[in-house]
Length: 542
Image 1 (spheres, one colour):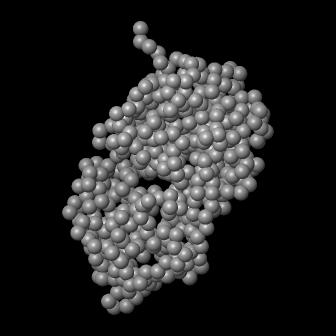
Image 2 (cartoon, helix red, strand yellow):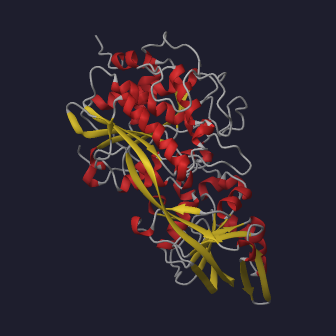
Image 3 (cartoon, one colour):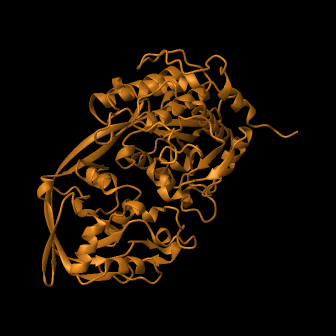
């Protein structure tokens, strides 16, 4: 007879389903003693979503009263559930950050000098610029411009846009995304699938490693996945990052973006054809092209330091307490301009799922062999800073961290017939999801919109880059970012008790069952051959 490992987990996940059958919303916004079930049920998810997206929490913004109220609610729930504080007796892990804001941006210009004259690019209209290196005053003086194509150095892909180029004191112009996306060639990088090499973060990091004085990315709405307005708005306000002392990587003193029109005009004035070079840069053998132009700029920035907090709770394992399965979901929300900040889908849904899974583990019988850590991360919307900080300051060594299961923007529009694994094919966790999906009579699919790069836009990325296998899933028929999903509530909407949360609960139960199985095993899931990530040697052989 086949051992049905999933039965005790399913029993916990489903228990008390008859006790709660609808979205009653009977709890007050910040109640910590509401009538919650030990199982993963619709009413509990609805109560948490309603509370976490309420006006009482002031939009779940970082800092001040809003952060205090949000973290207080999470601590109240962790305490009620019966978790232990996850940080040496504290529920909080302090996350330092630095905020950089360009001053008097309306008057900041980029001065481009060519052989026959000069031109000027204006902040917001043609470009955005800032410092990534915490410099109160940044200056470029006639820095030579060099076009480096997609700005990628990827030995595994046998690709190096920087080969043979000395960039000391020079400014690089870089295309967004990668050559595989540009050519839609599945044999080049990953074809239409977004890769880390296509991300703006990587391009700035690589330019700094190569010794450039500055870097500007050419914006393309299709290649980036967002319009110029999103770039302009982001760089017109305070930009947050971890302080330099918390990050050993080099940073650019000057960095920014150009519109495609600005780039095309710049290249033309320098006697080059932007469109022809863009096409050429997607071909193997491309080498960097010096432009007959220099760039000068000077601007001031305000540099302020602050502190936010991850909220961390723990269920202790009864056999291997020094090993842990991590669940993560970010608590912060940033409202778009003109948006009323509720953050219901992004990410009250994920937090509700995190709390429900914690409740299920607290009532699980038998108790998990491994410990389970629940992290409500901060500053996800500002560059995944809470998760980035955690993996460099882990509360359990990463060598003893089995996996990270991340919950972000769960569906709120009913059940779906399949689960989409964002980052499918990377790790053995795919097999765990498939086993659970079979019990739920659902299919497992790869990411149905790989060109959007969702894997690189949520907290599990930080764990993956540190070598820990990760799992990030969404109902395949209900991905919130998809414009073809008109019934899915937007991230801005206030909680509606009429939303169909059956799919939300089904997804949360699936993630509980995956983590529950991991918590009872002795082995560690591994990255698959050819994956983009790997466990360091110090983390192997466990």
